[in-house]
Amino acid sequence: MAEETPSGGERTEAPTAKRRQDFREKGQVAQSKEVHTAALLTISLVLWLFYLPPFFLKVNDLLAHLWRTSCTYELNANSFLGLSLFISKQVAWLLTPLFVMVLVVGFCSSVFQFGWLLTGKPLVPDLSKFDPIKGFGRMFSKRALVETAKSLAKITLIAWLAYSTVVDRLEEALILIDTSPITALVFLAKTAGLILAKVCALLILLAFLDFLYVRWEMEEKMKMTKQEVKEEYKETEGDPRIKSQIRSIQQEMARKRMMAEVPKADVVITNPTHLAVAIRYDSKEMDAPVVVAKGAELVAMKIREIAREHGVPIIENPPVARMLHKIDLGATIPASLFKAVAEILAHVYSLHGKRP
Image 1 (spheres, rainbow, N blue to C red):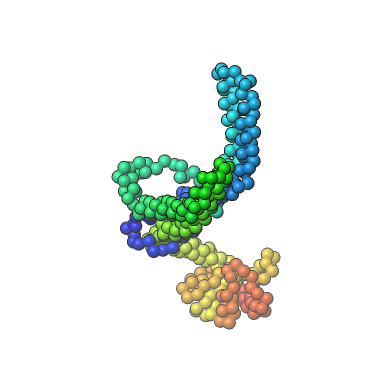
Image 2 (cartoon, one colour):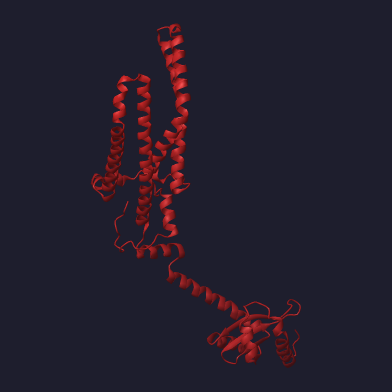
């Protein structure tokens, strides 16, 4: 399942959430076939333990029914078709629990491995898969060799289990020569059941190991290069340079809007050169004075310049200026500054003959 390493470098970075989601949408998830096989065989064996008696009882009833009614059938096409449909219907009903079990086990084993996933992308034809050169390469790829080794190991272990079980019970089998056919059949059934139980235990162990391997393999496939991480960040978060330019434009626009409020201010309070805060108050519209503009260094210089151009009073009061500069733009001043600001505004109104 490993991909070719791109020119961007080695895949050393852990997959991001977006990378994992992209793989899921494409249907590329960690899924072990051994889990399906082990679950199907184990559940089938358990089901047969409970379903075998009623199954044979129904088969016996069906055969008895056919035997009793065999004399009533005429040898023609219609009777043969009717008999075939009847037998097919009865066999279908007998095998329905098995078919349902296969569907349920397949669904549950898939959900257990990678959760609920519904996507049609794996069904979309991929023309690259029909390339004979790439197909020949896949036959001798690392994944193909690993799958071949796992299959051979599984077959070898199953054959060894069956052989060892039969050898262990060989002496008992020799005694069956002098027993009844029913006893021999029971012995064979128990031996076959024992072999199947051992095989199921083996397959469960192999499925667990293969599931861990497949998950590790998928994690390795999803790993990213440093360049891929950067490209994904640009796609999701945007190019940092473009974002910086947009941020600069937004800040410039906000600064221009703020500067447009300075001529409407009642007073500009300074620090005297480092800070400048413009205050506006209208008793008809506001409960308290509002900070309409503020800035430090060059921005403060620009606020003072606009204030002089429009005749807005400039008052030097470093302590008040420092405290007002901490207030958000457009916010009303806190109650702790009411007295200090009120004194400044009263002084400005008395000088210019203005009323709030």
